[in-house]
Image (cartoon, rainbow, N blue to C red):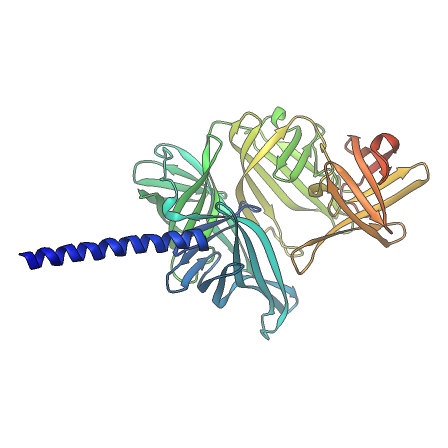
Length: 496
C-alpha cells in the first residue's frame, strides 16, 4: 500500500511538473514566437475578399489553403514566421499572347508581428513560362493581415430558420472558352427548416441543401452542377445588424479550386431601390460612383460615363456601351457600339444611408462573343445624396486624364499608377500635349501635389461639377490663400 501510495505521489508530481513545463513552453511560444502550432485563419485587412487557412504543426510541417491546398514547412526566424512550400502554389494562369501561357506561383510567405493579432504579410512570387518552366521574373506583395485561431472564433449565432440570406462565393464559375479563368458567384440561401434549405443562384437555378451547426461552425452540404459540395463557415466580424462576414472552407474532392472563400452573409429584407436612393454618390470602399437624374453614371468622377435605369421591380441597372474606336461612350455616335457590360444591383438590406447589395455583372471576353461572364457578389455602399468628390484621392485620380486651365493656357495631363516588382506603386504624370513625362504626383490631406524638375505645385479642390473642378493652385512656399484659382476639366476617362 505504501509503495503504491508513494508511486502515485511520484506520478502526480511528475504529471504536475509536466503540465507546468508544457504550460511554460506554450506560454513561451505565445510570447516569444507569437505564432505557434494551431489552426489559423488569415484575413487580409487591405482586401476584404482575400483570406487564407493555415495549419501549423509542431514538427515544422503544415497546410496552407487558398485557391488550392499546399503542404508547407515553417519556422521561426529573427524577422518573423517564414512559410515555404513543398511545391510552389499556383495562384493563377493567363494567356499573355497566342500560344503563350504565364503562371504566377507563390513560393514563400513571411508573417511579421505588428500589434496584437495584426501582422505584416510578405508574399514572394515567381512569374513562370508555363511551357518551358523558366522563371521570367520574381516579385513580392505586402499587406496588413489579421491572424485568428479557429478555436477562438465565436459560435454561429444567426437565427437562420425561416429566413432568406444572400451569401457570397457559393458557386464557382468556370468557362470553357477561357480555361485559365474562374470566378465566384453569390446565391440566395433559404433556410426552410432546422435541417433543410435551398440555394437560388443568380441565373435563377436552384439547388437544395442540408445544414447543421457544429461547435462554432455552420456546415452546409449541397449538390451543385453535378457535384457534392461541403461548405464550412466560420463567422468573423458583424456586418451592421443585418449579418456577418465569414471565412469558408469548400471541399468537393481533390483538385477543387478555391478551398478558402471569404464574404458576407446578409439577411434579405423587403427593400427595393427608388430614385431617392440612386441619384447621388455611392461609395464602395475607395471607389465612388455618381448617379445623375438624367440617367448618367460617372464612376469615380473621371472615368468613362455610362447609362443607368431603374426597373419596375426596383432593380438598378447600369450599362457599359463600348465603341470599337472611342471606347466606352454614353451615347453611340453610329451603329458599331456593343454592350460590353450590364451591371445589376439588387438591394438586400438597408440601415440609414448604408446599402447592402447584390452586384451582378454580365460581361464578355473581348473580342469573343456572345456574353460569357455571369456573376454576382455582395457589397456595402455608403450613400450620399450629394454629388462629386469631397477630396482629391488616388481612387479616382489614378489613370485619369485632366486638363488644367490657367491664365497662361492649358495642359492636358495623364496620371498613371504603376506597380513595381517590389510591390510599391510609382505615380507618374505625363503631358498629353508634349507626349512627355513631367514628373511624379501624390495625394495627401485633400491636396494633389505634382513634382516636376524639383518644383512642387499643389492643387486643393474648392468645388466641382460633373465636367469640371475648381481648384486652388499654389507653390511649395505658399498657402492656398496666396495661390490662384484654376479650372480643371474632367474627360470621363477619354484619352484624346
